[in-house]
Length: 215
Ligand SMILES: C[C@H](O)[C@@H](O)[C@@H](O)C(=O)COP(=O)(O)O
Ligand SMILES: [Zn+2]
Image (cartoon, rainbow, N blue to C red; front, side, top):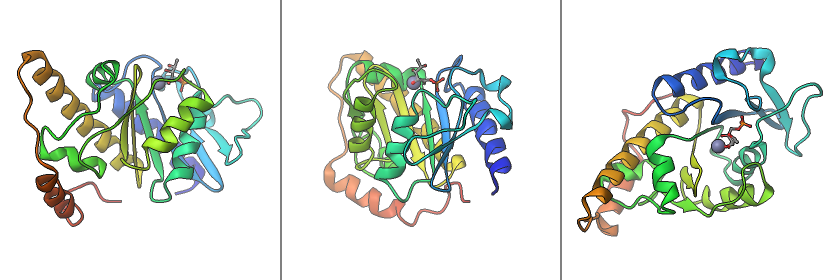
């Protein structure tokens, strides 16, 4: 896809993220790998006000186009592309249940086999750091190497994938997992989890599972 098509796809992904109930207001941001850097949503802009001209190119050193202001989280988006060569799209949101689990500073354990969607047996939660900082980007750089989806403590979710459709799909799946986990925590009962061995079986099966969104 060319820049115009990718920018349109970024905006469509943002709008779909809101339609799915995964975000509110100007929270969240979306990017795709492009040339030596990325195309990313502008900062503080309601998704329904974005046009393809609002989308900002940021190079691998963090330089961006004059007259445009990229998302305040451009550091962690770049950190993801540096950490994972298999990833071309990043979705960040403050989805209600993901944010709730992140406030508890908890990773989501293997409560259901679908936890394997991130590529490992839990959805990790990385430590808190102020939004838009190098420190937060460093935590993301570390965390994203173990899982394609991570929670940011007291903040929200990052989901990364080969393309935007898959990244949004992953964000939605993790929000469902987070909602189950919050319901389970609310019971006050011990929460059984799947064993490392059972999760290894699912992780292996997922390598060839064919019903996920394709390019
Ligand atoms: C304060 C911001 O909302 C921050 O939480 C950031 O992480 C976010 O989600 C949206 O920031 P941008 O509009 O700068 O992308
Ligand atoms: Zn945020």
